[in-house]
Structure formats: structure tokens, C-alpha cells
Image (tube, rainbow, N blue to C red; front, side):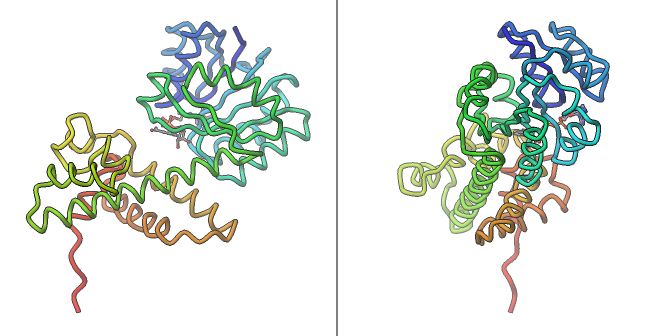
Length: 300
Ligand code: NAD
């Protein structure tokens, strides 16, 4: 049993904290939204009135916040880094930019604290089922080993990608690839159907051929082909297009910072940017199929 502070009880954080309680840990929780704190308290968490109070006596501090600016504000501007016990291991599971993740790890090290970046893959469903994948970046292998059993109480895969920020880089790479696979699958299905093919038959052909990929296998973007896919439920998420756009923005920032060239990632970013601007941000990211389907050919 570990003493854990959990900060940020949104779509992802709430079920993750609930899984830690189920696993028998003593969990103190805080969120800016009091109702989110009460909901977790009714599941056995200790309700805290502030992030600082939640961290009192904690062995592990886990944060799950929207973006880099929120994480930086919590640990640096609000001074949480000074308030956490020196022996506590800090684990930020939010998806944030690599530079902020490295900055936080450095700031923590200067105060003799250990901070791990540990973004997740698996979405709200994975957070609820306790099947998330964690991609970690840590300055210290020992801190990672100490955190791993706790992460396994919320997930089924825990990887050490490298040093500080490496978890965020891995997450950006994965989601950039996912967006490209989703767009490519949508293009192929649209091309086939516009040429008279049955999308179900075309899907079966590609699944048995070299075009097979995750989007086609478990998340077919063509409506009605796969019972449980968001495409068959009016593109209700799932994983929202605006979150994919956020992750593509982080991938583009990582590319710019490292001078890696990502032509398809750049195109994916532009397509999701347009899609979100057209009001599809809250729809599942597989709704990019509709954007592809409605594109008109360029006229001479
Ligand atoms: P969310 O907006 O539902 O939850 C964020 C929570 O943080 C909110 O409850 C908010 O009140 C709280 N918060 C913000 N600032 C705070 C502060 N200073 N102190 C305490 N609480 C604060 O977001 P989410 O969907 O849970 O996503 C969280 C992170 O996980 C994001 O970085 C997102 O990119 C990533 N992620 C989300 C998904 C997904 O499918 N939702 C999947 C993988 C990764």
C-alpha cells in the first residue's frame, strides 16, 4: 500500500485514481472542481482542499492535467515542488510538450526531487479498465522502478522510453503515426467506395493484405462496418479530434525543436486543424473520414 496524492480528476484522472483506491492505496485527491473531489471521496479517497494538502505525507504525487501550462503552473508557479515531501516521487501523466517536461524534471532535480513524465495511451476506456500504456521519461532508473508497480495498478504496459521528456516524445510519435494511419485508411476506403467497391469487402481485403493496420483492424472509420467503433455511433468519442490536434501540435513542436522532418505529420496536422475549425473537435478523431469524403478535387 502506498500513500498517493492525485491531482486532476477529469475524464482520465478520475478513473485512474479510482483504480488506485481499488488496488488498496491510500489516495488523497484534489481538483479545481469540488464536485470531482467529492465523487472520488465517495469511492474511498481522502478529499483535500488544495494540491498542497493532498501532497502532505505522500510517497507518490500523480498529476493528470490538460496541458503543459497547467502542469508548470501547479508545480512551479504555485510552488507545489517545494511543498511535496523530499522523498516523494512525482509522476506527471498529462500529455504535454517535451520542453516543459524537461524543465520540470530539471527544476525537481534542483530541489532533490525526482520527477517522471508518464503520458498514457488507451483513452478513457483504458483508464476505466486499468489497461493504459504508460510511456515514461525519467532521469533516474531507480525512481522509475519504484513508480512502476503503482503505474501497473492503472495500466497493463509500462515502458521506460529514456531520460526526462522521452515519454512525451514517444507519445507524440505514436499519436502522429495513429493520425496518419487513420487518414490513410479513410482515404483508401473513400477511394474504393467512390469507385464502386463495397467498403466492407474492401476492408476485408485490406485486412488480409499489406494495408492492414490498427485503424482498420479495431477502429474502422467507415460508418456501420464495426459495431463498437465510434464511426457506428455518430462518431461519439472515443478520442476527440481536438485532442488529436493537440497531440499533433506537440509532435510538430518536437519536430521543430529537433529539426526532424515530418511531411505526413504536417499534413495530418493541417487536416485535423481544418476539421476542428469546422466544428468537429468534439467528435471522435475517426470522423476525419467525413472530411476526406467531402473534399472536392482541385479544379484547374
Ligand atoms: P480533463 O479536462 O477532463 O481533466 C483535467 C482536469 O484537471 C480537470 O478536472 C480540471 O479541473 C483539472 N485541473 C486543471 N488545472 C488544475 C489544477 N491546477 N489543480 C487541480 N486540478 C486541475 O482532461 P482529460 O481528458 O482527463 O485529459 C488529461 C490529460 O490526459 C491531457 O493532457 C490529455 O491530453 C491526456 N489524455 C487524454 C486522453 C483522453 O482520451 N481523454 C487520452 C490520453 C491522454
